[in-house]
Image (cartoon, rainbow, N blue to C red; front, side, top):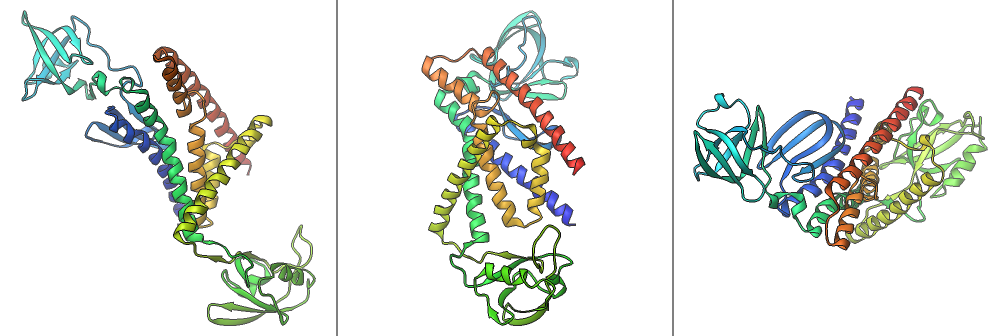
Length: 424
């Protein structure tokens, strides 16, 4: 049952991080009037899919990623060439609402004809030769192109990504990383509320963990017990004094007085040696006493955690560049393994780890690496400076090559993670 809980929490964490990121893209794209064809969490085969309004919401097998596919980002719908036989169905407003590209004889309540001219982006008109008569039909801006069981909504020019201003497109792109930054801030704040902060100059020593098979476990000590005195000497908040007294008492019985809630306990423990450790040990770890955090302090400390963690992330990038080693990089498998280990320690630790990953995801996506959000922002910056967009073919090739390279690196890193997992 514990394993199921850890796996669930791990998958849930990745689901939340990716969903928040992609929702940022989705929300601001919709606000700009861009048609978002699909909002997908994960990659690979579909597990679940449903359509709401104009967008297909999809859950895929591998939870390490996602995308909000906007009209115009990729080559648009296959064009209907002159002379192609098609069938159309009109709506109540006499505008075309469905365009059928195959199985024409099986379509009912349709008008069949030979396409003479088709414009599904600007004028939204289709000119058909229907039994020798040339007829022009208006196309509804949300008309569907249907081929077999596949339905694709047309994207008029003003619904495509490239038709929007540089500012609108930049906002739709940067919104993903920004949402990760906001999520990281919220998660840091939640962690502070759950765990509190360490008390300065504590007046007591609190037991955090008890090692199996050691004197403390045999004597019945539990996490949360407070050490009052040892051999009659008051410990107070002097953690080092407790360690020193235990260390010099290897093999000698010691009288410990503890407080558990409102109850006072007296136990006898005989410290013994541990492999690789000097002196006597009873097998306990201590937990720093904490206090609750107020609202204003939570905001301040969450901001401090954001700044400190960002500095650590960039320090890690610098070290990785200066001393590149494949073993220093973890992919989805390694990250999932570490997340599972942290989830076993408790929800407050997982919350803190999720905050770090969310911040990392936002920063990484803003790096000017082809196929990432940062690279797309660079192209938009160049467009703003030039006054005209970069050739879509050239930009698309850069992103394609970048994605291919990232994919190859991900395969190599995942392979390395699996080898480390197998070797222990």
